[in-house]
Picture 1 (cartoon, rainbow, N blue to C red):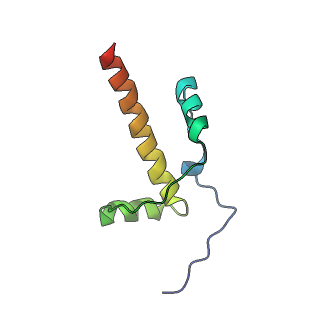
Picture 2: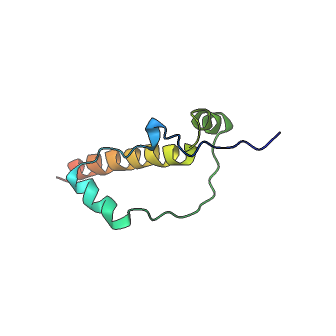
Length: 81
């Protein structure tokens, strides 16, 4: 299979910044842009689905995980009060 050239001007909707509350924005600013390389095992069909939307699949996966994390933080805070 040949090498696929990525269109650097292509910005999928998933790659746009997510709308965040003020509380999560201040936390986000503390770690903004800091990424860590990790190895993660994902189901093949799920990974193919993310990749099928075009370049930026790792960003999309990160965004989905962040939204899940933030939703669960809000729920946990509600249970503590």
